[in-house]
Length: 205
Length: 205
DNA sequence: GTGTGTGAAACTTTTCACAGCA
DNA sequence: TGCTGTGAAAAGTTTCACACAC
Image (cartoon, rainbow over all chains, first blue to last red; front, top):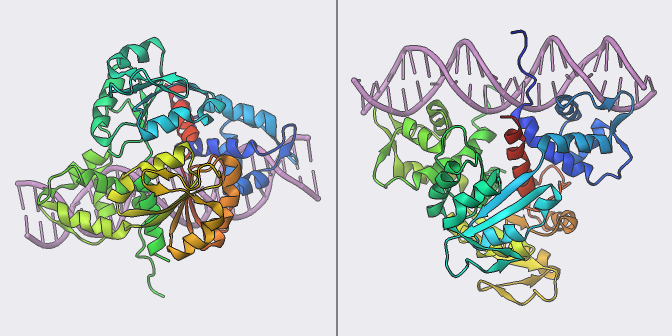
């Protein structure tokens, strides 16, 4: 047991998508320095170099990073996958119509709702399926990520159902803190929370 | 110059909305221990105590925290404010219809779009206003936070316009990294980014 | 010369552990 | 006795600064 930690720090993982987004604005077949990329991403150049060094040594000293190669390496780490959206209300429907997911390699493989008036209707050529089919559909289609876009009061139950169906990653838009077993990975997106944080700093100027 | 830092750490500010959300699930006129609140929030009890101690000493030794009092204190810190939504597409419209903002004390004081077909229409009894009126409306209504829900290619320009109009806090849903002067506070919500982070950890199990 | 890769230093955040108060 | 408030230790993160490769 000599050394056992080649793993990428959590904070670095959270910055990789930012670098990828910045690289999209740079022409292919070009080189970029850590200083330039840092300016685009709004971070320190040393941070860029350290972050990218976790992926391997892809830079060239005296030159910088090959934009295309770097983009491919980051995409390789972050990957892609099959997602299902649970809840076809305002937010769920907006997510179903959003095409940014597929640009990043994610496929929407299901859209579920418990409202009988919505089930069977189409949102942007994607049919709304009944909640009864949730478990079987997730398993059949090998869905890896569940997006919870239900109202607050249904979210916990949905989380338990998708977890029981074998999904281990959840993106939660419902304004509740989900209680899940430790092997389930939850990320939270809460709109009011973001406004509250901004508001905190407005008061302290 | 003896001591000059009573300020609340950034990470603590980001957790306060979580505690507030947890407290909403607890009956009023009750007491809660750091251990219970920590379990609900998914953090360590010592962290809860340290976070809350930055707000002052509101706990009672041997008993815990008064739920109502704690809720009021956190709300006092996080506050409320007037927000405008720029972009009335899928996402902007969903945000305009979302009632969670007002439950947390935020008022939507304007919804703007540059599509002449949308201007003048109503989304959930809120009228869509033309982009020409953006600056004057933000100033007149003393808007403090701008929510950018435009496509990627319009976002940077919108950020510059709202900044020029005096708004110093931006919640950005467009999938670009905004370039803004340092006194502007930007928070980013990017759906693909969240999926990519989840996907990274799926690959490493 | 130019800009990466990386140890070491500085700083931030989390967790421990226990004194102190109801 | 039970649980907070908080110094001090541990862990994690950022930044510096410079050797080294192109």
